[in-house]
Amino acid sequence: MTKARKSTNQALLVAPILILAFALRVHGLEHHNIWGDEAFSIALAKQNLTQVIIPEQDTHPPLYPILLHIWLRMAGDSIFAVRYLSVIPGILLVSVVYILGHRLFGRAGALLAAVLTALSSFAIYYSQETRAYAWLATFSTVSIYASLRMQNRSSPETTWVLAFLSATLASIFTHYYGLLVLL
Image (cartoon, rainbow, N blue to C red; front, side, top):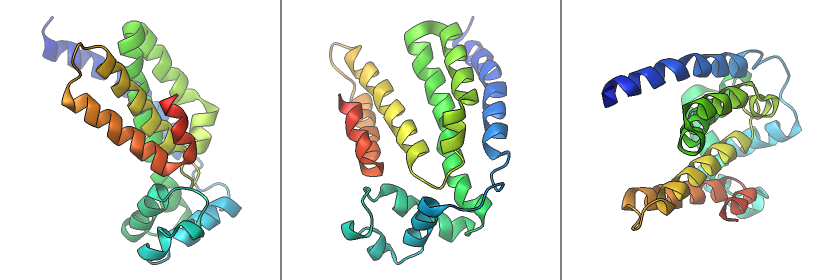
């Protein structure tokens, strides 16, 4: 089987899982009102960008408030719009888990991991909340995958070193729990 055909077959297997993950994350996105922490995130992101990045404004690192600040300007501040920013990494997480699972456990393990991530109530919940947790999970998973790719070679490729550093820094600048990925 050619590499292109193999790639197409994998895409056909993963596409329904991603569609399911998307549907589960978008379903009921506006069902609940904005709650306290979400309101704080939105209020912080609506400020001038120089105010958003001041450490005294929030106890968390600034990457998510900066992303939300930019997102609000592009998509608006409806409940659906502000929560949709977390849907994006929620879908990406399913994809990255599939890729990581394929590397560690082969195709069957990757499909199972992707399905479990798509159906995970934890992953769905945080993909529907205007907070940084879906981004943290995605950046951390990319960091782990890049770390595995770096370790698998006698001399790591610059691409994977840069991917690891970028994803790890993005994780740390999203939430302090991102430091745990280094352990």
